[in-house]
Image (cartoon, rainbow, N blue to C red; front, side, top):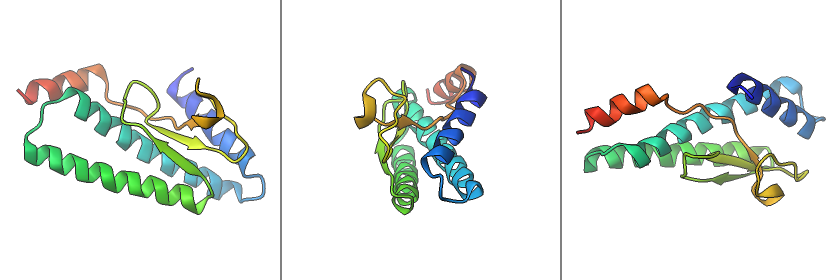
Length: 132
């Protein structure tokens, strides 16, 4: 499945999950979550792959805390729970849905992964070279 297809599937699932809410608001919330999930994905990739100074690490950790708080606030406003993982090899942000729908191997207790676009291999390699 392409990233675009995964995004469409995610938005369609949210619309189905919230049938009594205005579709445009549900889609806006979903897009906001995908943007935040992309930030979380990229920060996780940096933490796992790039050597950073203490000051840079502190700056990135603060950015991560702010992003996580924003994800939690969005979810709380919609009656959702977020599961935030720091492992960039899978979904970094997962939603625990009231219906129990899931697309992860862990089932309903692991939730539905929010599509995120990490760094390309070229971008990550370039950042790793800059950090040396």
